[in-house]
Length: 294
Image (cartoon, rainbow, N blue to C red):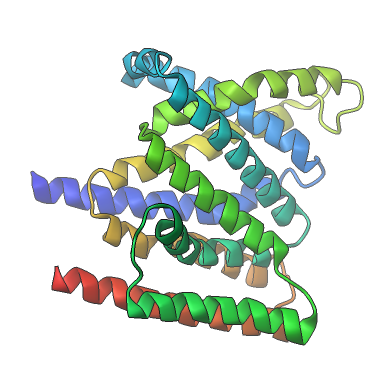
């Protein structure tokens, strides 16, 4: 039984990260719609999808308990803002030919998580972890000094998702309840924005063809399903094992950006990616060695 659950956890992890990796293909289909409008639909239809899902699989009991804990709701109000910012920036990056920057951001994310753990959770970095973080910082510094630019999109994506993960870890709410509350908190703003821009929206559901409306509604599934797969895998396999799968998503994004969408992979990006990939190799080696010691 335990072996079956472990295999199921691995399959769910692969599924989650593959879905996150190919998500840009979906957003490219909505390229003519502004990133803000896509975000609004993403919030609304994620909320609807989660309500329907919880009708079938349950979970409203945990939701009622959560409403008795104002401190946890306050933290979820912050996480909802962080994830909305992350979604908005990701959609903008994909639809404005910055998918390589998005990919780099999610490659940086695990290293950023290590730093957050050290600063906010009192975790001590091992020597190889320090070396990995130093390599990543060097990659960004070389880009700044040699090319006079900072990968702002990448760093903002890594930071917003990193802080989101940190706060969600602290609030300790399961994935489906957390996502439902986050989208519920964002829902009034989304609905007001949608109603206020009915006449000027680049994609009004009142005048869109049915195919476009179905694409917009699919935003709820695109958002929720990988997150639920991730939550399912996190309860079945060790976190260290889950850490190795997290490179699937940005790797697929990288391949799509270069091979399918022909984004330029110049020397500047090449050097930064080389340092980040080296850092991740060191980081993965440290995870493997530490896991073996345990």
